Image (cartoon, rainbow, N blue to C red):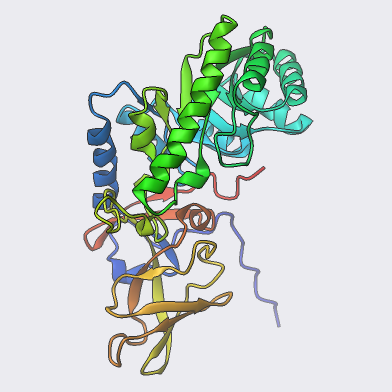
Length: 383
């Protein structure tokens, strides 16, 4: 008896949908993008910044998708941010020609790749250490390229970044002395402020960040060094930086999608902020209905990130995503008869960025039809 032929394993796997398919036919779990809501979010940002002398450099770590980056650039963004060299490589390969690696890059191999990539795009990177700067300078000289360098200062997140003021000035001077590197400005992102719940908390955090940036700019200008760009900000605070008179470039990322955690941020009225709409969903199938108050979906820990809490159930009134295991999600139902086996329901992920990184494809829909399918080209690009 002949053995069956092995099934070829392709990477990435084929998408869970085809263009023109109805949503009920999409295989699950699937990462879904509501194009109407997505496009509204792009327009909301455009209107909020209209008339302001502030550039937009959206952060692509949220979407990891050159198709989205190109749409942002078509609306006037100067380029994108990313976090890792491999993300930058994916963006450049996808047609994005202005990329800031808004992070430190350490290690000979990574620096070599970064320097080589500068042959194909306008490329920037952050530094907060003189030793790393020296290694970056060597790599760029060997590659025969040029690189924009931003001095990252710690504005309150207590993560990366040199101390503001004189330490930032000293590092900027070292960048300016290099023939292969160009001092491009200051990177001042307060990640910890993005999910502070009240407007007062967010405003206080950004006021402190602005003061630290101003101290750094003053120190640099006393030494005759001009600061062309101050870049930072995220979806939770971008208007605070944009109206500060100090930042002239902002980096919101999650605004294109939103997630369950951002929906917990409050506005001046004490209610959740609804400036941007939820456009990103995980489509799930009810795979088991063991009791009247419990349903099981096929979206578990391998299909979404739970670092910011469980997802929100959209299509079943009174339902709550209670807990997750590797391949299963347990829904607590408000009453019997609300869902049946095989039903498709949408979930809003708790944290969009790491959830997107779990998928190869973004199924884009409008109404009840799949309109397009975009590859998440930088999925798994964390090296």
